[in-house]
Amino acid sequence: MGNIIDGKSIAAGVVLHICNETRSFSERTGLRPGLAVCIVGDNPASAVYVRAKEKRALEAGFTSRVIRKADCTQAELLEQIDALNEDSEIHGILVQLPLPAGFSERAVIERIAPHKDVDGFHTENSGKLSCGIDDGFVPCTPLGCLHLLRRHHASLGAKIEGKNALIIGRSNIVGKPMASLLLGENATVTIAHSRTRDLADICRASEIVVAAVGRAGYVKGDWIGEGAVVIDVGINRTAAGRLVGDVEFSGAVIRASGITPVPGGVGPMTIAMLLWNTLLSAHRSCSLAEPDLLLDC
Image 1 (cartoon, one colour):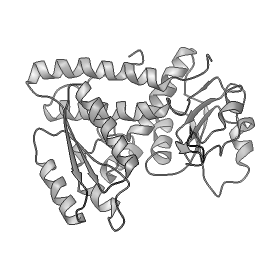
Image 2 (cartoon, rainbow, N blue to C red):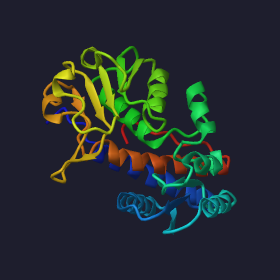
Image 3 (cartoon, one colour):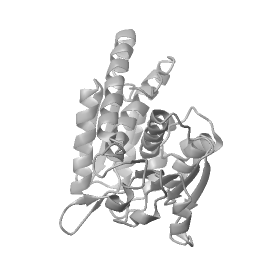
Image 4 (cartoon, rainbow, N blue to C red):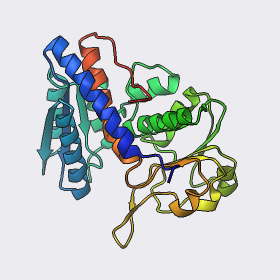
């Protein structure tokens, strides 16, 4: 279908661009961008995500370090983060979420040095995004969504500016930062959540819909207005084991001018943007001009 926004293909182009920029960075500095991932516990889904990040980082020419701790205390994890904060070979640090019961995610995130917080979750980076200060790190999933939206609008000869954009979900990881990014693009932004009334009508009136609620098929196909752009952030597994998004795809795809599939939409972009943030951090650590994320990459 011509209106499918192929996140997998677009992410591959971004990663190729990162590979080229990494090669240039290494030739100039003799260094490689370094990404460290800490994973605690035995969550199978987390283990899959971490392996994917490790693989992509190595393919991009990065130093990749994975610290796996099957059983540790929060204090031990914080000590590990402190060591990575001081490690000159590491430019990006992330702790895979969710953490085991009894851990404070906020305390762990806040322990990561803001200039190495390539997940963009530290309150310093969140605050910079909210204030429109562009020297922080933007959370990877919203940044990937924005790139997909920019690419799609450019392909139509259109702009995000002035569009009515609806974000369904108000999390600190996707919903709130996505709102800040779209405001920065001069869209008119509505954030909907579980208490929102008349959601279907709001959705039908929206030209951009970003769904991030974590409920399979929550957004019905006939809620999508003709020609709207739909970014489906949800990844839900059905009883039959199939991965589906938050949007009822079969009904939405016939109305939307562009829609991301699940899988193969936003997911690959999230990892690509993690690498991008790490590359930026490496450049900043050497006081080098940052590369640009091109729409045609």
